[in-house]
Image (cartoon, rainbow, N blue to C red; front, top):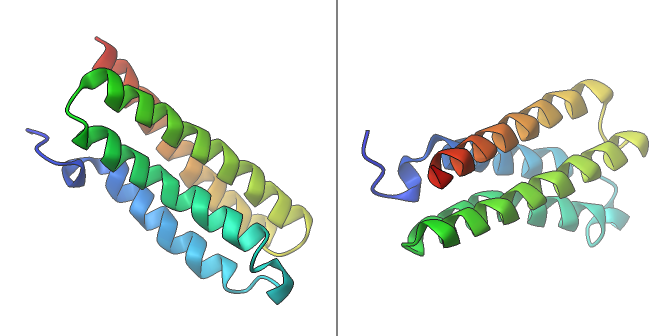
Length: 119
């Protein structure tokens, strides 16, 4: 399959789905977290597909890889924030584990893409 656009990338599609889940789950957080943890989680989640898209559009493999590393960093931020949300009892352990699994899966996909691009 020829990748003409970032929209063709499965990792981009999965990270868009993750963003939607993060927006849904954070709706139930306490109102006093709207400018704290909710904002941080949403920005980290949005940053993943955004950096994949921006890197792909740069047109140079090295720049694409650089943006993929930024997306990985955003995934690590989100992973940490999900753990905090679980510890604060804003989300259940089950819900946290499901989303953490998705974040880890997307991170593996990004790492594999980086490896493929570096060859």
